[in-house]
Length: 84
Image 1 (cartoon, rainbow, N blue to C red):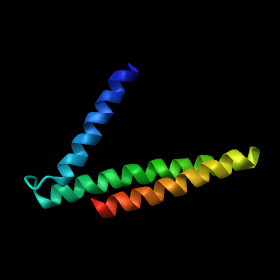
Image 2 (tube, one colour; image 1 turned 60 degrees about the vertical axis):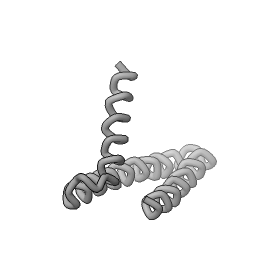
Image 3 (tube, rainbow, N blue to C red; image 1 turned 90 degrees about the vertical axis):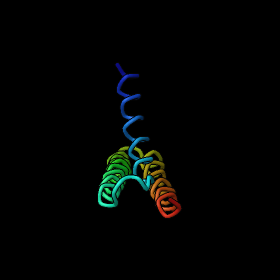
């Protein structure tokens, strides 16, 4: 079951990323797909920050690690978005 969900999500995400780059798809649809992908990654990275802040109360090194991981993912995501 886990493999099926992973395959479906991978197909949807990869298909959306490729569709956002395709010139055959109208611009408004590409912009909508791009906005949805960016929103998904913002939610994921925000969740990492949120978990980092919660863990920070109990375990300071783990919380700092999660927050730094969120910062690194944010920077790499911005660089990748600008490149694309």
